[in-house]
Length: 275
Image (tube, rainbow, N blue to C red; front, side, top):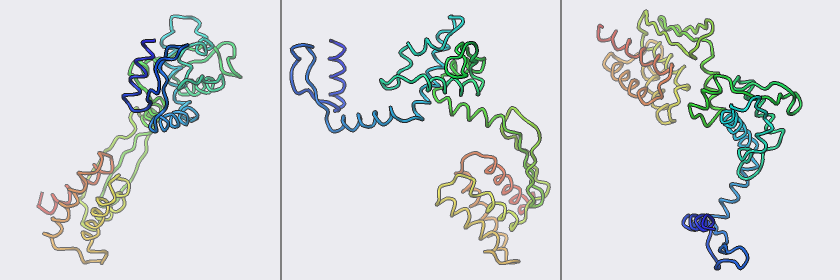
């Protein structure tokens, strides 16, 4: 009963419930009722418990950790998971088909193996972690989906970007353990109009806030002479605009596009200063 009392005290402190009477005659537990915040929290938890994506995320994480905790049992049968506390998500047990879908997902991503007699349809009942699965557990990964997406990104082909006199070529060559390798070669510093064009092309992918993006595009347009051919601003104005552009770029997340533009602006400023 002390555990119940502690729980009631905690929920009362959180202003989720309130006591409306003393200990009951049968259970000895206090009589409580939900407050407005408690009712809202209960509805939120009910919706979360019914959310298929959240149930799938829990199933993948719970299965992975359960296998790791029971590797001493050989062969390890997944049916044991159904009898463990880990099968519950917010008080509701995962179904056999939900567990099977989690097994299929983890096996497809090479985090576990499923072999032996069928557990559900064609999903094997004998489960084991792969070395990658062990690494996920030991690293304390809580969002398996995010981890898998990150690994897929790492397995993408290497991308090499070259800038040459205002021309961008994206060359993809072979597989790599890293998602993007950036090799930026500035053989010839871009002229103001070419630099402005490059900025305009890459700016939308820089993940800047709307105000910063608009400022960057205005500066690029001014650097290009406002779109009027052969009407570039004077050198001092060009230099000021490039410095302003560089300032805008420093607030952008560190990406390949940002690095590319920072280098391009640096080369253009160096050319103007005679470097």
